Amino acid sequence: METMSTTGTVTKSALSAVPLHPLLAERWSPRAFDTDHELSSPQLTSLLEAARWAPSAANTQPWRFSVAVRGTAEHAAVMEALAPGNQAWAHAASALVVVAAQTVAADGSPQPWAVYDTGQAVAHLSIQAEHEGLAVHQLGGFDRDRITMLLDEPGLAPQVVIAVGRRGAVEQLPEPFLSREVAHRDRLPVDDIVVPIQSRPLAAAS
Ligand SMILES: Cc1cc2nc3c(=O)[nH]c(=O)nc-3n(C[C@H](O)[C@H](O)[C@H](O)COP(=O)(O)O)c2cc1C
Image 1 (cartoon, rainbow, N blue to C red):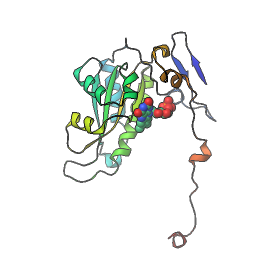
Image 2 (image 1 turned 90 degrees about the vertical axis):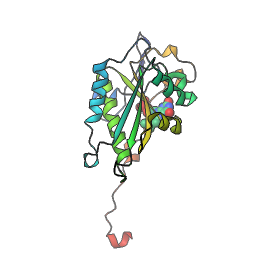
Image 3 (image 1 turned 120 degrees about the horizontal axis):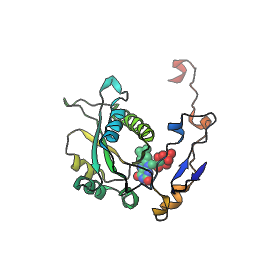
């Protein structure tokens, strides 16, 4: 259900068959961010700590984060690499964080779970952000070559840029972003995401 507060921020709680933890139910990806908000050092630390403590294959911890705080040269460089439809609103977030996966280890061996693990670390970070009164919007719409050049580290594959900040008033958004901001959140029914396991003998399956 979508509701708008007197300050113009929107809440869009997940409609679930059973109650979810409020940090999960209330998380959603905003485009309206508060330009008065600056990410504090403790807030940034808590986000990175949450990511750091995610599980990973053989504890390889292949996630890498590059933080660009609004108003810095690094932020301008990351902004330029975003797709125009993301630039239109992501500039208002307090920081843009480039998330990359170390898909190749220092010794040259592949790390096949790196992308999976990195997504999991971002999920941790997103929920910690909600706990801190912040919000995260992940962005896959960016120029990969450009971001790869900004990182300049071998074996690092950019995955997402995350806009982090405090939710802002929706009225600041131009269309079509304003309509998207107040739109209903939807998900596939649980039945559509559950796939039965076949119990036929292995010989019959081959
Ligand atoms: C990997 C990934 C890439 C995404 N890329 C974009 C993007 O480029 N632009 C955008 O506005 N939202 C982007 N999103 C946000 C999704 O559209 C959003 O998470 C989804 O619609 C569900 O909405 P919710 O997070 O509010 O529940 C991305 C999310 C993920 C996880």
